[in-house]
Image 1 (tube, rainbow, N blue to C red):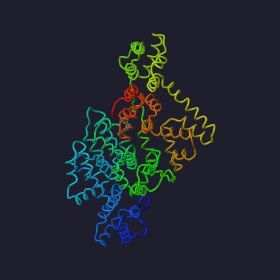
Image 2 (image 1 turned 90 degrees about the horizontal axis):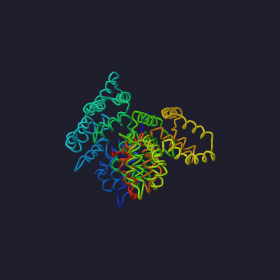
Image 3 (image 1 turned 120 degrees about the vertical axis):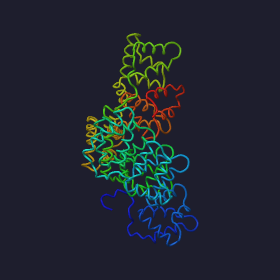
Image 4 (image 1 turned 30 degrees about the vertical axis):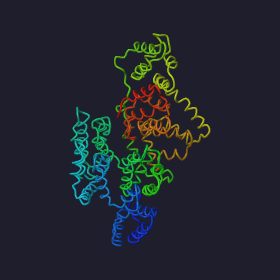
Length: 592
C-alpha cells in the first residue's frame, strides 16, 4: 500500500472473488443468515475487491448481491453493509440523494460530503449521481438550497480547487488581506470574496493564507467566519476551513458529535466510517483520542450494539487506549489545530463587562435595602451583582463597609442559601480570593497524593507544567511528540495514577485549548444524573470576565447545543425559586 496509506481496510491477500461470492451466498441461503460471516468477509476486503465479488455473485447466481443483502439484513446493520458494498462515488451519490429528497434537506450531510472531497472524488460523484438517478446533481442542489449557501455548494461541485502543491506566494498576503477587507474591516460582509477564495485556492496555499490572516486580524479565520456569517452558509464555510486545516480532525469532531449525548446520529456515523476506512481512519482515530481523551473504538463500543457495533469496530481497526500504537503525523496535526485555536489576548472575550454609569454608593444602598426587613429581594441582588465587573463589585464591597459599617459578604451569607449563596459569594470575591478558596482543598488532596507516591517523574512533570507559560508548554508538547513519537497524555496515563494523574491531565488539556477544556468541564458538570453545582459555579464565576464567550462558542461547536439551553434545562431540579438559574444565565450572556 505504500507509505501514504492511512486507512484501516486494505486489499485482502490471496483474494478469490468467486469463493467469496459463494461464501456470501451460503451465509444467506436457508432459514436466517449468518451475519457474523457476512460482516467478517465484507469488512476484510477493500472496496475494489467488493466490486469484484458483486460481479462474481451476479455471474454465478444471476442475482444482485446488494438486493440479497437488503433482503436478508435489517436496520442500521443493513445500511452499513450495503454502504460498504457500493463504490465510494455511488455511496456519496446515494447519501446526497437521500439528503435532498422529500420534505426538508439534510444540510449537514451536504456540507460534510462537499466540503471534504477532492476534485477527483467530486467529479466521480457527479458522474455516479447522473448514472444512478438520471439527474443532474448541480440542478438538484440548486433546486433544494438557496442564498450564499447554494452558491458555495455550486462552486464546490465544480471540483476546480487548485492541486495541493500549488502555492502562489505573491498571492498569500493579498488573499489574507482580501478576506480581512471582505469581513472584519467593513460593515457587512463581501460573501463572494469568501466563496471565491475558499472554494478555489489549493489546500497548502490556504493554510498559509490562514496563518497570514491570523497576523492581520489578530484572530483566526474561524472566529471571523463565526462573527461575519450565519446559518448553513456559516456552517459550510467552517467545514471547508476545518477540512483545509485537517480532514482527520474534521472527521474526528463529526464522529464525536454523532455519538455523544442522547441517541446516535447513525447516518453520519455510518457515512464517515464507510467513506474514510480506506483513506485516513488511522489519523482520524488519533485525532479523536488526542481531542477527547478517549479512543474512537471505546466510544463506538459504548454507543452501539450487536452486529452493527462489530462491523463498525472492524472498520475502526483497533483500540488506541489498549494498543499503544501512536501516529505522530496525526499528533502534529492535532497540536497545530490547538496552536491555531489558542486564544490571544485580543481574542479572549468575557460575557460580563464593567457597568456603565456605575455608582457604588447607589448600588450599596440598593443592596442593603434588598436585604433589610422581612424577606430578601433576590432579584435586585442578582440584577446588580451579575451585571457589574469584579472590580466594580470590590468597590461596592468597600463602599458598603464605609457607608453602612457592615460587611457585605456577611450580610449576603446570612440572607441567601444553597447554590445561590455559593454563586453570589463567589462573584463577590476577588479572582485571587476565589481561586485560593477553590484550590485549598484540591491542593490538600494533591499534596496527600504526592506524599503517598512521589516519584521523580511526577516531580519533574509538576515543576514543568506548573511553572511554564501556556505558549511555551504548547511548543514543548509538540517537540515531545517529535522526539519521542509519544503524546504527553500517553505518558501521564501510563506512568501516573490517582489525583496526580487527574491534575496533570487537567493542566495539559487546559494548555492545549483553554476554552475547549472549560467547555468540556461545563458539559460534564451538567450532563448525566444530577448537576455538579460546585464545578458549574467555579467555572461560570472565574471565566465570566475572561473567555466565557469563547467557551460558549466551543461548547456549541463540540456539543451541538448552546450553553444557555443546557443551563436552562439542567439546573431546573432543586432550584425552586429559579434565582440560581437566572444568575447563571446572566453570566452566560446570551444564546448562541
